[in-house]
Length: 438
Ligand SMILES: Cc1ncc(COP(=O)(O)O)c(C=O)c1O
Image (cartoon, rainbow, N blue to C red; front, side, top):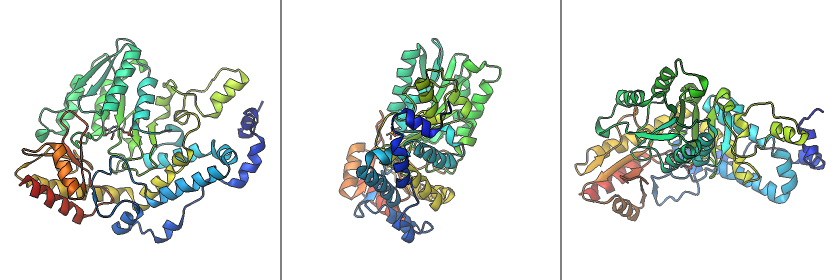
């Protein structure tokens, strides 16, 4: 039996809707915003975040995004179509949209559409990968002391299930003296014959430290020389705070699994994320959820064994979910493309440099984030002498500046100058921090 999409729908009992669904069309280019949006002008970029309050200075946008106009309009377009005709609109798009979303993410990542999984968050991506990788009892997951709660928990839960051990190493003793060489040396020294996975975070949301991904991937590649495929060290990266900031082609970095939410720096719909891995890495993954994909469904309905190995496109949220959000993700990648990845990286780094240089001059401020671009990205962590971080955040809030505290043991104050900010806003924030530091 030939099982193309039509047959698949027939077998699923919904073929009658296919013809009607065709009338509904799939995602078309957006919108009125295009006419007025000038991506070459930063004021116009800021204007796209048109619901973001103007009377406050938003320096915590890395937490969760305000939707830029074109993303919001795209969500609304899908929502309206679903509400108007849920069965036909969803049925018509459910198998074609994931490919389109994956293609737009793949273009940004430098990979192929089939290598991209669409998730709802960094958390879900980490769970898919850590539980999907084959780890034998007695093997080890090596990670660091600097990763986020959800990363450490994904590691713990996966190790428990596999009977593996977990080791967490410090990548530096004193962040003021940290160097690329030190990070790489520590990782190289820590990998042993038992290490099956190395899990790291690209940009630490505790301190703003950015890790040298390519250098780490090289260390892992060296450790893998002579190892059997099933014992190879797999490099897993939580990339959520570099993705959308750095002008880096992820598929060229040498990492094995790259995981990120797209609802932070990518400005995608809230509740979206991706995992990227090369096809050969996906092959070794065990699925957590039933895939909304043709091949496993066909195997199930025909009672024949599934012969194909797992692809990235099989991994995802599973089942019906908030389609209008997921399907609007390409609009966010379009937004980045329009503004330009290099320009975005330069702008965010320039604002961060300005902020760090200002903080570094304040005698009562201790800046934890490395200066310059090499080991930092869009996040800045600091403390004010004699003040609790929560109090600094509260006082800044009174001055209409939105800062945050890091959800880690140290809990530093964080600022994240982003695309919606201006140099003037950074100056205002610095002035207020200086005033409260005294
Ligand atoms: C480094 C890091 N990883 C993961 C997460 C969780 O991200 P998500 O909300 O996309 O699951 C966060 C949250 O901000 C984070 O800072």
